View 1 (cartoon, rainbow, N blue to C red):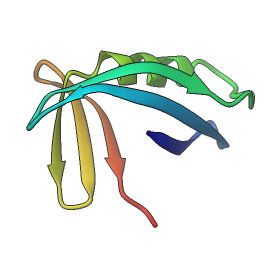
View 2 (cartoon, rainbow, N blue to C red; view 1 turned 120 degrees about the vertical axis):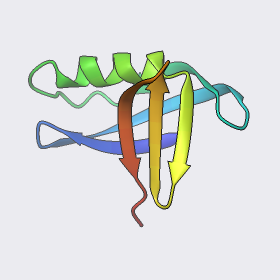
View 3 (tube, helix red, strand yellow; view 1 turned 90 degrees about the vertical axis):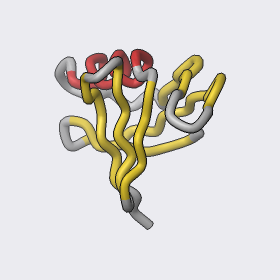
Length: 79
């Protein structure tokens, strides 16, 4: 999986494997990033949340990632 995010106004590319996936659970494997510098700690918090994700839900154009019942991240599909 490859995706781009914008943290602290700096775009960055991320690469991750999905080690397992079924109807509502997900296990994200190793995560790699490009070497662009992002100021602040938001990138570390984001990557930690991504790694902790255990379940997911898709509604319309949104992907929600959870750990137990706690929402960690929300993604919106863009073209």
